[in-house]
Image (tube, rainbow, N blue to C red; front, side):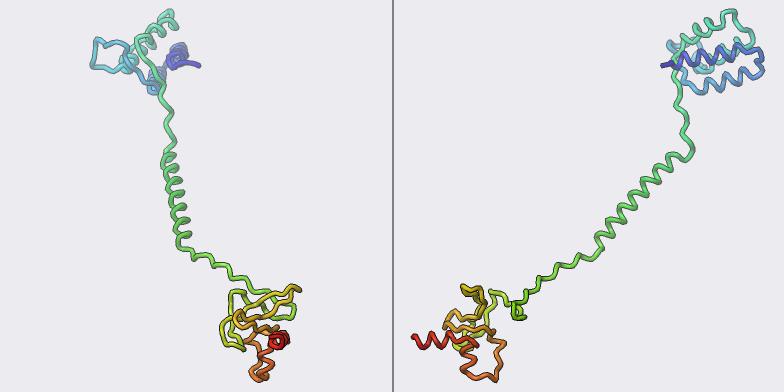
Length: 207
């Protein structure tokens, strides 16, 4: 990798070697502005900067070039420290980057605000009870109905060994295929007590 000193040395040799030196000093000044120049040791004349002292020496070489131009320039540069300056950033580059960051922050805040203000998602509706083979909706097993026989809240939906579903009172033993609340009020007392199922009468007869 080419050092700043070697690069400056090559450019100085190129400028001072040209026959037309009408713009040499201006080009030297422009060239030195691209480098940071410092003394290696304290100078005798402290009123001048290292850049000014180096420019004065180079100006003398423009007017009276030495025989060993390459060697004289190298010897002269040994008294200084050189460092190339970073190229200037395009005007507005930093502002554009800051504007982009601000835009992202604003967008993130707007997204968070929209999410906070959004209405909550609707809760899933409860599943509907499946219909039985006869078209009637099955009641929940935990729901009890009033027994038409003993008038207690002990009627529940039961299942027989033949997988037939029926209604039964857990207190008096009443049974029927028809729910108590579905029995017609005009039905006879016997039909309501039987619940369209004659096992109750058989049980009573056996008892």
